[in-house]
Length: 464
Image 1 (cartoon, rainbow, N blue to C red):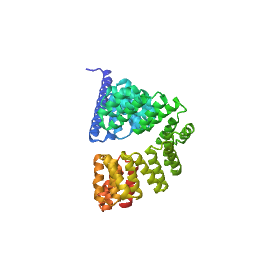
Image 2: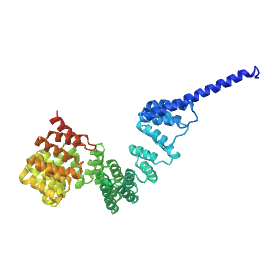
Image 3: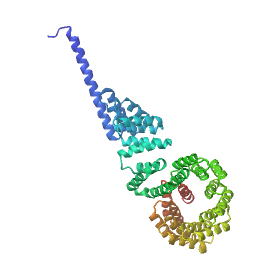
Image 4: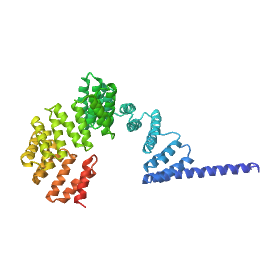
């Protein structure tokens, strides 16, 4: 028999046990609801129930993390960060989610510290990949290189990481760049063209005795592969190495324009250093073209052609300037001079043909033969096929235009000018559905750039 004094204690113990059992039941009930909600794809509800379960089942270190990961699924990044912070320990996936949440909120300093802390716990390729992304967003190329080296050490199958690391090594450690670039090309043959460009630049650069010109060559290669942010850094290094390098200043001006800056100060500095540099004149001509100052553009290219009269490139540029000024006779003469100087180069025949088609000038006796000559020199080049198709369209040869343009697209499905000209061909034939399909493809295509706007304008004009 229990004494009268012991009974109250027994009752308290029973009550405590009852409360604990009730709490456990509630905790596991919340956990079950969270898992069910997660299975259904209701991640917001899942996050709420995981949080409730975590508050009761305090020994389950994973529950706040699971709440955070569920919140990430519904883009509730601030909530996710709160959950991750309450977690006693995070898995690799949790650290990745924690870092990603800060990235999504554009809190890059917190993202860097979080990824860095996580990478001390887990030797994680994913965390280093996020670090590389953050440093790239901040323009901190050397920190990005370090992160990529760690990422590729852990994951040798990521083609983009290998390619990007190869780019950065080209800038900072050229002797180490080729293995990474080669690996990137092996992993993804689509980057082979860019890799070959960089490989050639490294070879040419290594033959230069002037460190400033080495950087200029590397920067030009970055421009060719459309990484103008890195090109700008290379040209900045070039002018730091030699403040009197006119070409470095001119190319820095070009890189600044390509990255949304003005660039005229650098181009003026280049001119003050060397008024007889064709590259300085050419890059200034390109600047004036973008500004719509076609008389200044013409003057620069005429000077370039005067310095190098046998270079067809400058005569073609002169032709473009005259065309923009409306002097079609002088433009035609300049384009013809370019093909006279380079009769075996398809590009100049193509430019002559396009000029004739765009301006309805001498199509039958100059434009069409020029397009056919370009095609004979480069029969599998989508650009020359596009030019030939455009001339066929401009001369009313619609069936030939359609066949030729489809050949260009078959070779390169993302050669957007051919899609535009094909749509124009369909419109001329009265084939509205086919034209609509071609134009909507370009309008919606990723990377179509200015051609997307052209497609949109044609859709607004013909399909309202």
